[in-house]
Image (cartoon, rainbow, N blue to C red; front, side):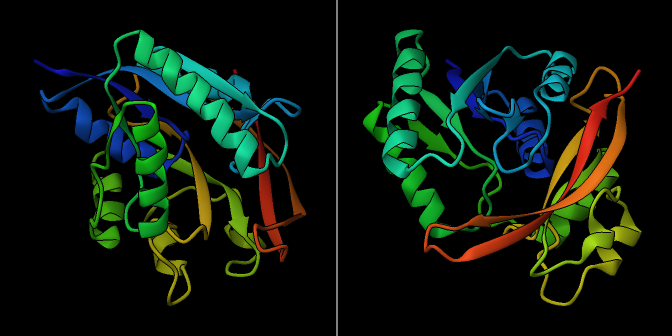
Length: 231
């Protein structure tokens, strides 16, 4: 019996690798994608990708999407409450497992497991402890196509924003930068690959710098490349 599974979809590289792996085995039946969207901007939380492009992604993947709307910069109590409500609704539909694309952030994994367990879910991490250099290389070999949409300006400069992921991009990363951006160095939008029926067309918009406040009240800066739906 295959486990009815919800996949937490970010629209980025790690989500794509993890989903591709899970779709190729028989243990889990991925029957829903779940994405958190800022209800004020209608963009994917953190990544800043427009909801229209998210919807084009999932249409090409062919798995139904549930959008969980969140207020801008929700506190943890609000985030957890809204997520629990959504996961309990999935549970009523017969879902038993949920999956994430995390690779090696132990605290985040433990947090996800604990929160999902409260709703009666078992959490799956198909990429856990994977070699990020190998994962990045396999991403290219498998034919995935992606562009950076959010870059931590404390780690990478503006020129890395709005770049396509190819071998030159990875070669240009400064020493100490994780090839999968697992420490938050960069986030991506995947627009083609083996899980897509056809390419998602987009137009590169303006690049902007935004400053936000982290959980410890420290200021953090990010470069964003806006993507507009193409035709």
